[in-house]
Image (cartoon, rainbow, N blue to C red; front, side, top):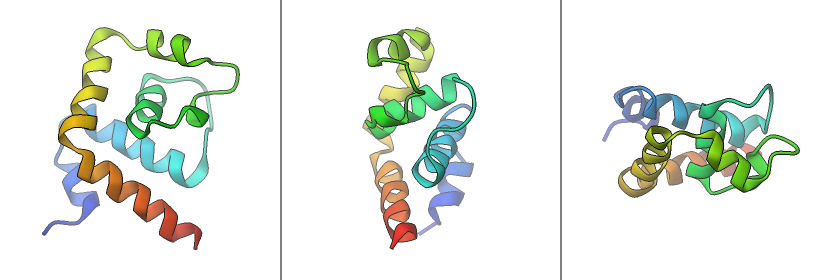
Length: 95
């Protein structure tokens, strides 16, 4: 079986970018300005604490246009195994 990184690499943009940002959020937390990738990654992970400071959930969801909302849904439905692998990797890094 391919590594998680390799599987993510093979996804089309922006799916790959969203998962890479999710990985960064899991390892480093929120950094930098609000981006669609960051908001999408927070929703993919279902972790509102990864939304930028002062940005509520509704604001963040509205920051994404319909296309990006579909990306979030697609990742959560069809790539759950990659999301869970990223979460497990983050847990092991902190041990």
